[in-house]
Image 1 (tube, rainbow, N blue to C red):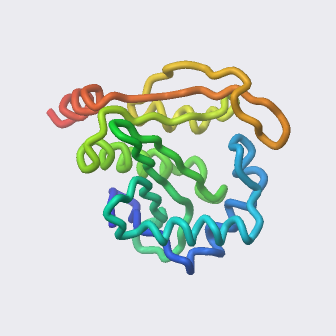
Image 2 (cartoon, rainbow, N blue to C red):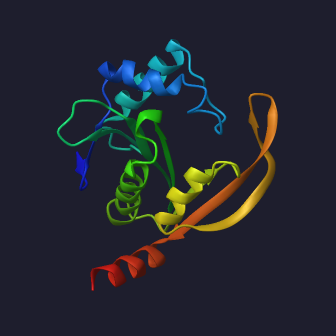
Length: 181
């Protein structure tokens, strides 16, 4: 488990189905991503795949339930997907907690894990150009806009652009060292 000021990030469990399916099947939550709205089977498959990876020696995907401290209610998921010397950050949250800073707080914990535990050199994330809330989260994590991929993502039959954001290990440690003095 990873703890932040307001959150507990714990491994997902199969009994998280209802909470994960609630946001994963919400058309507003998945508006800017190529997956969803999820069927019950898609949510079950996601949970089974994620839970099966827990404890694996060659684990590269780390997806955590985001739970506000002192509560039992999962409000979203955050993950880091390592591939060699880089890792991708991803997250999704129930609408009831949008604009509360949870996405940024959990994303910062994942970036720290990627650099300090997994030893990657770069963390990146992607978002739709119209998803300004997600872009703000990435900026607050110290990421910079690295580029725009044109018409690279199909979101329910519509070709969409993708903004690619990233932060290097040296930038992360420089930023955190400045903030700690």
